Length: 294
Image 1 (cartoon, rainbow, N blue to C red):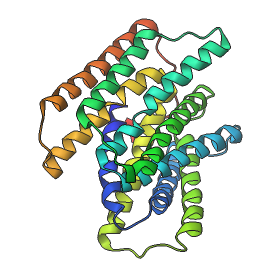
Image 2: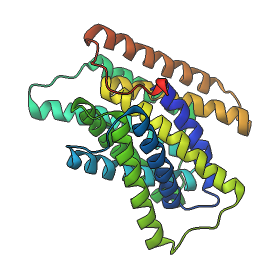
Image 3: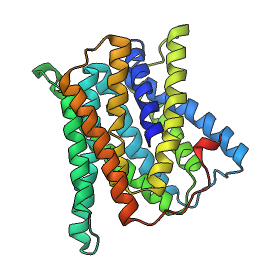
Image 4: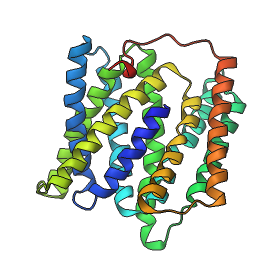
């Protein structure tokens, strides 16, 4: 999860730059195309078949994931990066609320309120670092970012369910990438009427988005396959730390005391969640692919 957050933060920078040349749906399409090719090659190398016995679960995971991705890329292109990142990272809070609602409805499932507190503490750190603002003209873009976080929470829970069902990470990410490519192409054709011409810089950004996002997706899928959703949600806040570091290095953002405190809170929340997991959960069964091996 830590590696995934670093790669996603790097991808966010590339998406922001690529948004000057391409629509969000077009970026999603190329991201999916690169991902599908990478996953097909890796699956062949590791002997992982792409045929699945769970097409319905992959379909719903792809629908929710692609919808969230389109909304997030759209928000990144139209909002200040800090605001878009904050709204998308609401996914962890949405996830906690979904799990809590499920526990109430099912009657048997219980949530560890210490983990829930760690997630909320992590989001307090996000708010301290980013301190997002929205003006009236950005209301609809803000709604898109908020919806991206809510739908992303659903997608993460579906990834966790696929992992428990025995689906290898490469297969999950392959079908998600195919869904991204198809949906992105359809939306681009319907709304843009065609593809934008490429420049060497633009093509390099699109390739970087695809490679970074796909590698991060494999890491994230593995994390949600073998770990607790709320622990992963808390560790995911580290992406804000990496994003803030990029802002300092690339855009000369100042290091404020609020940001320093926020980063410390995020790291502390992540460590607390990991410690709680080691105390209350047995080791998870390993899956078929370790992204650090390739």
